Image (cartoon, rainbow, N blue to C red):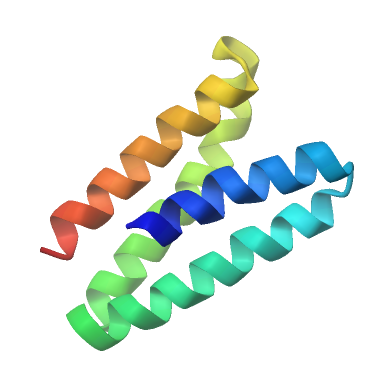
Length: 91
């Protein structure tokens, strides 16, 4: 669960403050890959696939949400949702 938050929040922060979106993508991708491997080992491929889909949906959904509530509030909202789903699914 903490790595999910690091991927979403850290990826956004790196992209924003470095001015290099691809560096943020590296953080997002590395965290997503690490989490997916961990989920697959502990909960199986079906759960891993579902959680990865949620992680990617959180990333994608943060963009239109940011237009309505602002960038950081959007990242916070999707991070809470993704981390919460991870916590529930990996208990």
